Length: 118
Image 1 (cartoon, rainbow, N blue to C red):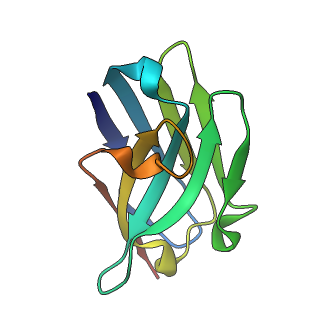
Image 2 (image 1 turned 45 degrees about the horizontal axis):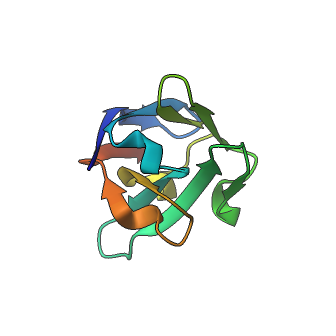
């Protein structure tokens, strides 16, 4: 089993920045990919960004050039730096991890609220 604990999030005005962090513990040898999903009220959960142990990464188009995902393999952490935030970024953000991209939804954090006011 893998445990994911998130920190960060909160309330920010449009144009502001927030940083989310996620620490993994447990059977971390089974994790290759870590990432962040988000779910806004009334919408489906969306994969925002992911990164592999080797550093391959990708973003959903709506956050490219604004969000940056990073990973510290030694500390088993992943972070999401969110800049130029927009009201449409408001959602609960979830850290996720898995052995592959297809299995990224194997393990979940508890979720952290990000609210961007206009």
